Image 1 (cartoon, one colour):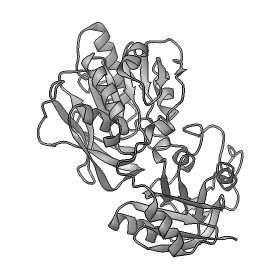
Image 2 (image 1 turned 90 degrees about the horizontal axis):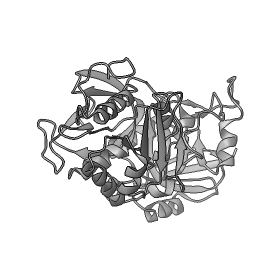
Image 3 (image 1 turned 90 degrees about the vertical axis):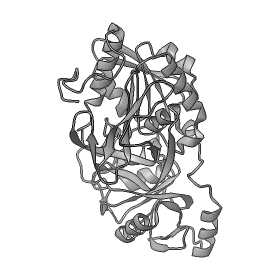
Length: 387
């Protein structure tokens, strides 16, 4: 086995064995608490330039397959696991995770104490780190880490977005057509919308409001993605144009932060972020609690106790994280727009929040009929479930 080294920017060092491609990599070290879904995590564009530490101890047991990827490639800067599976054991597996990491050039490390590493990141916060299996000393690797860019101020969405527009057709009868601003969209999102009869025109991250309005006849979706929302002024301007046109809009994750900025709210970096499949969130509109899938290191800065006036009417915090009171959703009261910080498509993860897609469909239906401009009351969505 080839030895590997992980060094955090504060100098903390861990030693283990090389996993995946041999080499050296740097990025922001973060931990993800999901017990499953490592393939979806690796291929989630929101993890671009991040070294992901899996808190579940056994990784790779189910191998990899051609169906669970959330984008065209793996985006993580590095991968850290406690016990890597010796061989996959699953009827859906078409290969091993180790071989796929090698094929896609992902440098990783295994055999270290991920519990100690996670506790360190939880106490000190997410920070830059490096992994090397090329014989670098801890001092040499630390020098590379401290010379690497910070996540704060990083504009990453254009680097993970689609180069050209594409269309995901509706399944069955086409009921609505929307434009999706691809800031790092996952394949499960347009697939979830397609099941509700929505045709999605996915546009690159730098698409303008005019582009979105041209293709989004009935509504606009703003996707998840990586980086600092404070650096994505182009997306903010596009969303403002959609709001001015009063076209129904739904944003998730990075899209929630972009909507917040478009409304004049601020954003800030969380200490260690939310990354996992088990985050409890209170839907303040319906009074229900949902267990949700998260992947974000930034959040919207908005008061929880009152609506805020914006150029597009008052906005209220619709969802709150129950672990730390972080803003997890926004809802305009006089315009057809809302957003959540978590993932309704939840691939992998719980499906408690999936009815939010139905809420978006209901909003488009109401807007099309001219009967409402605000998100509909939370009763039964068009999916037949409580949203």
